[in-house]
Length: 314
Image 1 (cartoon, one colour):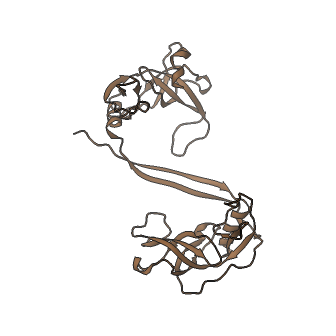
Image 2 (spheres, one colour; image 1 turned 120 degrees about the vertical axis):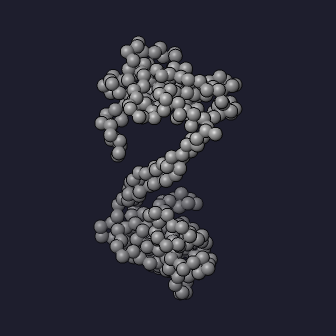
């Protein structure tokens, strides 16, 4: 039985965005232990606030202060918190309708166990000791017996040193298994060979193989060795250095149609000044010792390929 390949992968990047007047007031308010909602045209108060009425699409800026206590409308227990979640001990994800609001806010509830949580229970905000103007300024909710209250007074949204932008760390951890077709492709690359699979219907050769033809929808299993040489079909010049990537900018990343393949793959172009890379350039792979895939592709010295030979692969 062939080896089943698996690899842990992490996709991570900082997401930076600016804030409009409503979101700015909401997050700055959290820093000051004040929760603001926004009143819509039909009189509802939305928390978290939005800048446009979800019914009429009209711009709305009528800010209203709501309570720091509220009612749980629904919940789910999280027995095994993941890294960077609000609490390190088991907790409940909850939707809380704060007093005076007509919508619910998603956050976490610090409770002793699932038996201590119920829809309709009363809770209050536990503020973070250090607040910076982010949703994490609400450390969590905690059980708290109180009577529901109505909305508070209107609020101008004016604060000193308002928060004008946020940076959110986006991260996805997962385990990838390439499956039969791509496992065979990776095994061949370890031998410095490139294989694809031919569709039994349209006869196109796909590299990397997917195990099925994306056009005909039928399974593919006929292996075909392609390349190693190929043709640059399209390309881009990269001017921003990626974190953790030891390649000096600018460099060229290209779509390369390997000889015998009906699908272009990605590869970096080296061995030539970036401003001399062009469509139709003939290239070949450059391998480094112990690598499982080509480090980059370099010019072969052949004449450029005729446009008609690769125009269907753009």
